[in-house]
Image (cartoon, rainbow, N blue to C red):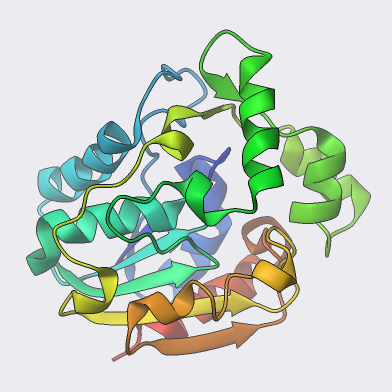
Length: 241
């Protein structure tokens, strides 16, 4: 039995990974899908990146998890990179699922196109809580591009405001991801439009892992809603020995 810890992306929480986790559990693996601090519906949205990383590291330590396959989706790549830097000895393999792969001193804002960063900051500035949400048309056309409109609207209603500081804060690492002595995999959805393909996830970010296993699928960014079985199969392929 393999132990998977799957870390969700921005605007999501761990509950939204439930269908993906169910398929992996059906294959007789142990699965954890914790919610990052700041991403719960009732969480304080003033949370920064260091506290967000610490919340997942604390979860792993509290549950005494070892030899784990640590999976990060999208923004979750920032989190799993920070967690691995702190407790690499508990991790068997890192799996980046159309996820950010930061180097020391980089923020998520550094890794997206400047117009995206400007949009995120403008959305956050319009509120007072430190959290912000995506307008539905952007969610529909960019994140949920390969799903139908009914599914897009149902999924959108389940999202939570995301703490802007976690996008602005720069990560502090003692080593580059490529230098981390652990197995690494990258799952690349060929229909993922959350980043423009001229500045895409793979190979621009995936190659920062050094030697890694590449799993390519036909999914878009929100396979956790649209194709949870396929997402589970990709994760298990990425995490296999």
